[in-house]
Image (cartoon, rainbow, N blue to C red; front, side):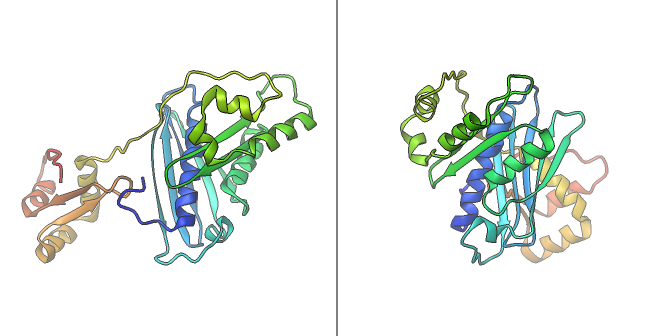
Length: 258
């Protein structure tokens, strides 16, 4: 996600936290689908989109002002809101919550409390090399955890650091953080970056722009370049490609690596 992008450090941190958050939510899906987290506001971070499928294939991107002066998450996302969409392929469910100025993790805790009525502790960490986190939730229908115990679990989770993820994972990490509790872990699942962009989708975008605009760009620049904001893949369309796009009964062009 960072390749071909030059994000400001505070934007990069927010992107990493969002990647960890969507992965934590998506891994609990009981159906084939996806989770999309989107932040929009009038601060220096204009938009952030992060998506993770039930197969733990993740992609994301952010757009911000050319010069970011924000030194904290609160400054970056002024007057922003966060939308979380869970899509099962039939009827998507979307919850919207105001951004908590302290962190994205606090905003997600607010989302779970208000939209899902599930008490949750969310901890998100990242650096230049990795991102990760913990999502603790009380299981609906089970015996209620005493408040002191629930607060203690939150304090233990909050001690998570990126260094912990570099040295231990799974039962080792959980056992270290929650040494006083009986814990179990499930079989680990890999998380992979995967972009679903294609030449056919790029052609759809060009058709939406209209033939006149495309022909004008070709006349001026020799071709139309379409760059995927998620993976940075560039696709070029020359005069012949553009003519074919707007011909009747046109077929999608073959994918070409460029």
